[in-house]
Image: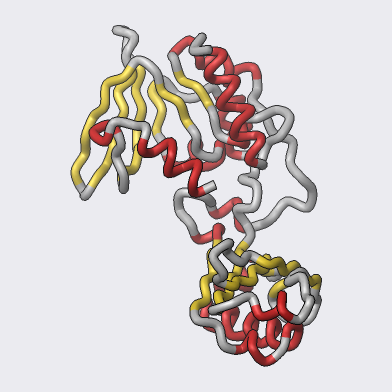
Length: 245
């Protein structure tokens, strides 16, 4: 996935890419243009454009961006009630000099109910660096209360019980908690849905195409919402709407 992102990034004009920028407001005016307010390094810039394509999770859009005109009531309610897939979860990585478990004939995959990691997989690189990753099975509120240091320690102890003493000596550990990422999750996302949500856009949202506002995030996809395929699906739908094929 990183190779795909890097390839797309290098194909864009460097002066058109604005990093570390936060969109706070979008206003559509009678002249047909939208004016996008962007905060960067505590300075506000205005971008004038004819089309706006949103790739943020729908719930984050409704919570963090002011729209003029306002989003229709049904659309805003739909957006706010749409869970961001996996936003409530966290992933742990332990990195090693080599994937030692492979030499012992182990796959690196495990399911466990003793310790914070409920599902573990081999994430080693092709160039020989070993890595084990696992999904943290405790909820967001418990993770916040426990703190990163305790979760990391407990995860290493769990990997050591499963894969042996070598697992107790990683060269690096990482804990990625999506619920604490402000550009991924809202407070409402801290509680994970019990089943895969129904995604897609209400008809009223599609009518916002009249303002040249389009929604290309995976949560906007009808068939594969929440997955990488959903991001491709919704992007395809926007491209079709823009007649860019």
